[in-house]
Length: 267
Image (cartoon, rainbow, N blue to C red):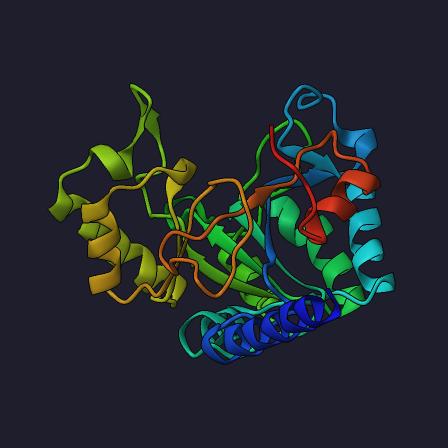
């Protein structure tokens, strides 16, 4: 009996060593959450978006970032993620990536100072056609968009990627990016890339994609593209179809902790 048990233990050890040699994943970092946010405003200002699960209070977001900081989390940059996926390089334990979609002015006004306070990095996927030429006044009841000056002023914290230029709209349950001809989709992508100054990062509008679109963005320089498919990522993930975890307004810190520790279970 002892011999059989010893053989099993040795076999398990051999399999672990073999997996370590042939696997691209670290034992302490098998997967990572890519967080997805949109609009963040002070709770006192939120009169129009109380039923919108995508609109977080500044207070909730600040508490989440404080949790990450106090618990030793590392915010992954796109460069680190690229090395993790393509070069199979490890990333620090307790890593998380923070992303924002659309490009709201609130990201600059309320998110930027919090991230800067903790030395965190994040990515904003902006609809470049909606970025304003001049700074705008703050309207808590409107989804104000970033200005180009705010994009430049926040580039020490945010990296900016494309979320299309003018094909984010939805008609008949399809985004403009999905329903446009391939030539139109390509022209929109190229314009967005030029305007934002980054060819490598892309987020599919409303998470909608197709194999031809994925091939097209790859051909035009994108090497990291993000969906809204639920789940985590690891070194075996498709770099052009990366999962993200949307952080909803009703999540408490316990739910947030389960998400960033990759323990959250989807229904």
